[in-house]
Image 1 (cartoon, rainbow, N blue to C red):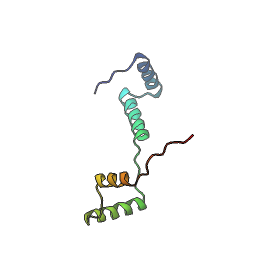
Image 2: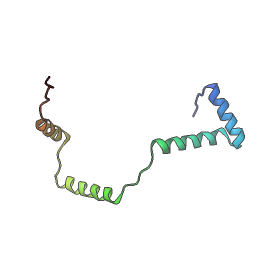
Image 3: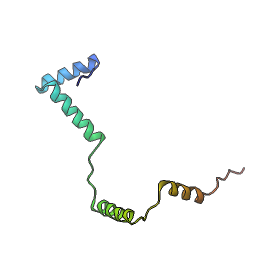
Length: 87
């Protein structure tokens, strides 16, 4: 993998690398791990979440579901008309 960095960032990488006595690769790997864990955290499902998923799978297998189109049609038909403000 090849990446391009602005000169200022290269200088920062080199400074930290020397101070921490690490390779560029180690530094970049840690930076990416930190980025990924902050941006895309792994969240474990709670027992309630797992129960809800099992229930949903059972209901789906039994045909007890609505399609997205059906849901949208139902929502459209139950919306109240938009009222204009009166002065």
